[in-house]
Length: 193
Image (cartoon, rainbow, N blue to C red; front, top):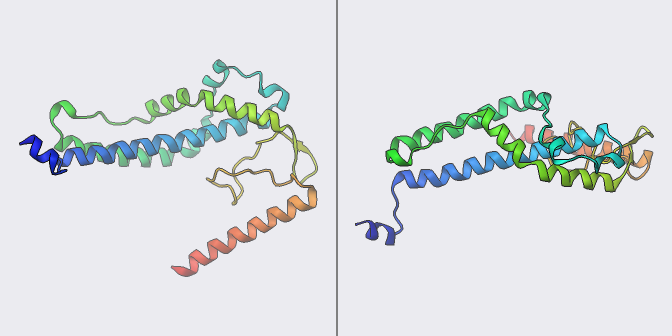
């Protein structure tokens, strides 16, 4: 009977939910991983001169934590984990006892993410040290990659936040142009509702 079901491409409902669960958990882990790598590289490169970025070791990066980032992202993390755990609950009601899964916990997922990101953060720090200091639109120098991610252009996006690279007036005009474009997109979305 199992061979007939397999040949026809049919699968029990719990197997289909398992595929959905794997995809959702992988997406969640990838999103928080990328966000932490971006935040850690920006945080370290903003507070250290480029020549010191290469001196960070695996242990330094592995022990790095940012409670501010965790607090700010907590609502997203908890909402995503609620969805994942809801999917696990659905899966566990249909799956055989031996195939059931435990629920995801925020603390465990964050620790796993901190462990998995170490090498990528080190690579990001090396890249930031190679770019060297850059000029911001106020005329001062800052470490490469020192953007905070709070401007409308790069909120949540993985983009280069160095607005003053081409000189002070060019940096300000580019920054203003991006603000105007961003506002235009928001207004058009609002009007389309």
